[in-house]
Length: 225
Length: 82
Image (cartoon, rainbow over the protein chains, first blue to last red):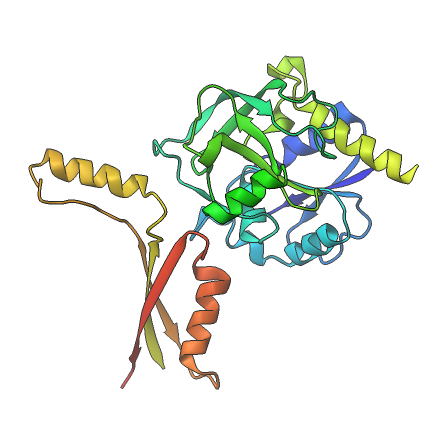
């Protein structure tokens, strides 16, 4: 399986993402600059964290206007898996690929620590290798991860089981319903604030993130091999 | 030529932790009459000659990039240059 790691000016988790795929997962991966106009050779799209365009105006707002985002929308429409982490999640909401928005953390602080997540839905192509309700340790590092959406959207998210990860125990940012990660209705676009790519080896303190990437590959192999 | 003044505010349904913190500081300073503070953004956009209707142009820019209508409202004023 061949992954693209998108790189915007100000991305800073692209190397972690690349490492996770290449060294820990053992799959093909390439960096793709934000002005790329073709993603057709890739089977999965990874939108990494960071501070694209310095978070100017709003997190992810300007990255969403990049050429490559037109291609990301095409890939999502084609049913390819698209994962957005942290700033990547913010970009995917700005792009309208996921509902809602990410606001300033309720306590106004940049939160950088490992948190516990609960796998609310393991019936997705991103989480099949977890148990339902499994508690996993994944780091967060964000100042604007406070998920918000209107009541109607929240009702839809719940009805369709689109809330994939919630914070377990302490909610670090004040997000609605403790939401840490959501998936689109079709089930091929996942956005999450915590960083699974930083939890892919015991040396890093946790390897709980690896199962997410393994889930993506498993689904793809079953469909393509 | 026109100068467009755009005011972007968080929608009423959206909590503004920054505004709450500022209100807290004002209360601590003795300004107990302050009942709420909301923080927004102010943009000045200079627009040169265009064949397009300026309202249409400004609304389009606001909705495509300058604001996120999921969480923000906007209003604007157009100042025509002499």
